[in-house]
Image (cartoon, rainbow, N blue to C red; front, side, top):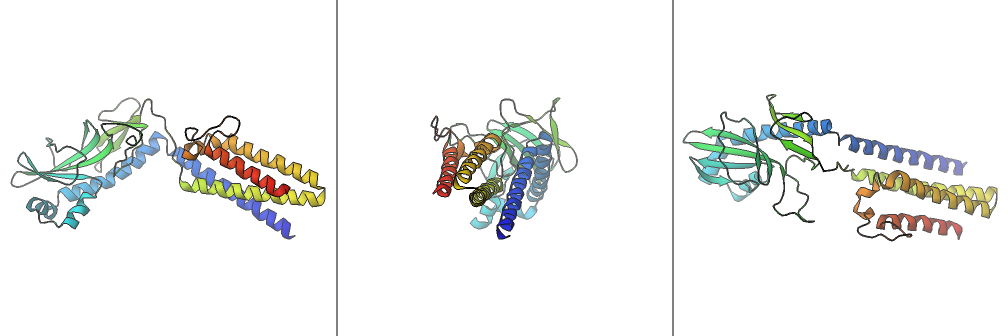
Length: 301
């Protein structure tokens, strides 16, 4: 009775972990849809738009910046925001909070209206708010940007505010396949399309890999329990052979269903780091084979 209960618990745990991992994978793949990405980006943009406008139109903040009355800690806190501020008096830039963008004075018709611009290193949204005394404040929000030099260390650049994946392209004007991102007042600010030549790569949460690890462990314990049951019911040879078949089937199942779809996105499974024909295609593949072989050896002995 105890063995049956243990077996049932293992099966339930195995099913729950696999189902949970599949749900998370489907959610991650759904996030690759342009429409879903646009909705996420629009929500994040509108939150930041609200914060930028309230910051650049705040008399106290701008006065403290102009008169240099901020303490280092206060200025550092302002500089940590996912957007930058440039304060102009006439045509001179008095102070700016970060170096994402070269100080530029745009000609804005209305206060606090967003304007999409493309610079040499990326795309930005800028806002302007005018104060008495010919003081103009520019707020700018980085959307996507690249380093001037690209190599394996400087290839993936994340903006501090909105995370826009590289397979999406931003533009100022609509096209046939583009989707608009709207401001708080409903106006279209910029447009998003699928970037040609950039493959959409799913980014799975760590919980997916944790669930699959648990499922793998539960499956190994279940196979071990089945083998012990068969040895007692039949004989040692039958139990060992069936365990060998089950472990081989488990490895082939992982390779067929998970290797390309999920595991290949981990550095551990990149053939670049390790690959040996006939032994293992990657370090991760070698690890799985070693664990399976170890479990069989443990059961055999």
